[in-house]
Image (cartoon, rainbow, N blue to C red; front, side, top):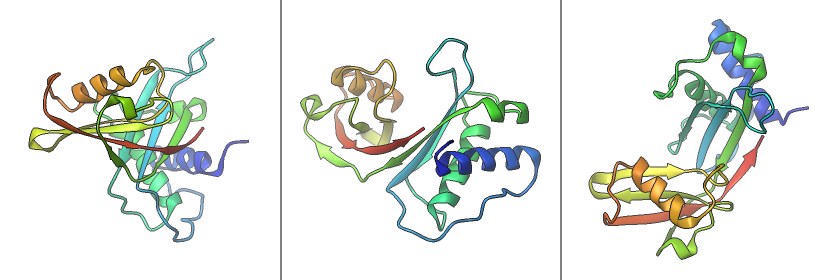
Length: 173
């Protein structure tokens, strides 16, 4: 049995792709986390985690409830991640869905204050270029590599002047 927010995400994607309204209730208004991300992986035989099919999030939450925000972000992840073709309805049942509920970030001075298993990071550089990496990502095992990957994601060159923030997240899968 999946976590209720995984069910919300899957149903929102399914309903959107089929052109119908989601079956779940919109939820009650509640305190929203600082950010919500939804990561989608397709099936991959013999692997713990399948191939990434979409990952989008929001730091400027707009929905009235956590359930609505998770549904909205899940649809974006399934249909609007520019790295991937939009999902097809027949892929929905086999998706591995992960929901990240982000806590507010805090400034850090350098990689010695990072732990990629425990914290995600946001790197901001000149021109407000920003790169975000979620916590506990496969292959991101060292703080220096996490920092390098987030810097690249922001479109910044190594050695650029940057500010670093870390954040915790509740990871639901």
